[in-house]
Image (spheres, each protein chain N blue to C red):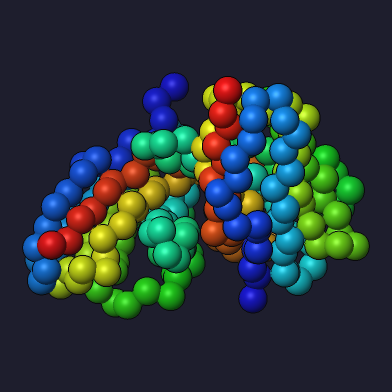
Length: 113
Length: 114
């Protein structure tokens, strides 16, 4: 079945450092890929998405490119801020969009000033 | 525009009791999904409803059930509570049953079973 594997955390970075959170997936066909973010005490918020191979999703300085050849969707940001401290989840939905979102375990990011 | 509203925010129940959680989706959204979030297992899919019909169900015991009403509001029920049911229960809504456009999540109901 569909599954998502993302790097274990926690990840601790200094402000303005470069961020990469790795995400790989297993799925049949061409799933849609997502990154969600969860701030303390809140639900998940959609950060970005990509629905086909080579698509790049971007939002708030974060980017991720859908790589079919490596089945990956790594999240990157050039310069993190303290306000980016949160838990980040990689997720996928089946090719037809008719299957529920499957999430990775989440990666906790702490950014220190 | 109001977001996804989950009530209550916090619950403490005793083993063996039952509990009902409520979710009001964004106005116009017809699909509601439920997830259980725990530190050990992460986010696990419970079930999904669209137009009052259950479309998908996760791998949870029959003690977990849900329903959706004609106004798209949804409830989930857990009977005979166990300690392991302690978790954050998240509800998510979307316009239709396709997850391609992403879900909008509520802030969750934190259930503690003692």
